[in-house]
Amino acid sequence: MTKFINPGLMQTSRRNVLRGSVLAGAAALTGASAMAAPRSPKLHKANATSANLYKAAAEQAAESTAAPADLTGYTRVRQELVAPPFAPEHEQVATGGPKIVEITMDTTERLMVVDEDTGASIWALTFNGSVPGPLIIVHEGDMVELTLRNPTDSMMEHNIDFHASTGALGGGGLTHIFPGEETVLRWKATKPGCFTYHCAPGGAMIPYHVCHGMNGAIMVLPRDGLKDKDGNLLKYDTIAYIGEQDYYLPKDENGDYRSYAVAGEDYTDSLDAMRTLTPTHSVFNGAVGALTGENALRSKVGETVLMIHNQANRDTRPHLIGGHGDFVWEASFSEAPMTGMETWFVRGGSAVAAMYTFEQPGVYAYVNHNLIEGAMLGATAHFVVDGEWNNNLMEQVVAPRAFAT
Ligand SMILES: [Cu+2]
Image (cartoon, rainbow, N blue to C red; front, side):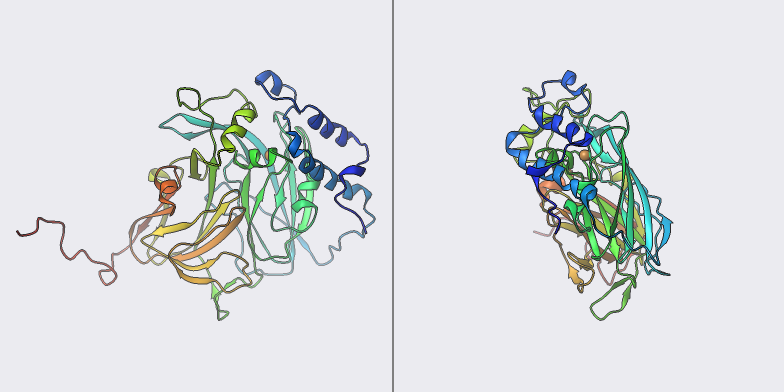
């Protein structure tokens, strides 16, 4: 049997030499000059074991004598990924046989404003330039075939760990790419449900990348669609894809948010902020206000929305103020959904689907119902819903007035 994880017996290769330089260069980063070297991010000693584990997992591919994958009966399709909060074109009930779903993602590093009011910003580490990364949708039994590219102007090494996949640290051990490199990973979607994916380069770089936005979700639908507890088909009209992101942004001695010239320059400061376990921001879709006001989600009475909520790092508890989770899948789509939920739970490192049919017009706030995080740290979205008001469900019988004394 092949031993996949064996940090002590790594063969020398070009890639090992490159990764070895990462470990050997474990001196503190002190500024932009240190980042000029493309592989300068350091890993603390305590994280070396974790880093080695990720490196060693990559070796199983080269040394494997396993039989090639049987792709008989599969047809190839390409899925064009789109930016959140939108979903790629897809079928809710699969037609035809299993597919090899080809997707492409770039590990883009970009400066993003987190909160215009305070000037808080971050050199976000992203999949395809957005926080969260794009939503991927396949069916159980399909193959996901990802081409992952690291742009030549990147500062950092990246990879991807799919929680929906099986083996090699979720693919994390097989997808390490340096700036200017690409890799292709194919894996079979055997577990139906919503799942997180995230970058996981090893050691402290794992939370550093995840807390800089490098995460997203994949939905693996049952081939015959979503079902209620009696097996009846449940269809949605639209998807609202919401990624909740906790940021730990460094501040200066005056309490102002620091700014940095290049991605990775904040590494040491960020780790200090992350050690507090107290986020400075917890936002939906990358920034305060990304899904409120002009950016609000739109719907109408009678429309059924599937809200997909991803949180790669931290527990959260979505609540739709004025509405409900008619059907909520906190775990597998193979299980009957919970019904009539007021608030549902997203375990850190997972994604959850909640289905709701709007019955009243108006503005709904969709929040993390830790209300400190919802109202003060940014975790709020709005649905603006058009339609006719139903007085049978709610009516203001007496408008606010002074009461008689
Ligand atoms: Cu990364």
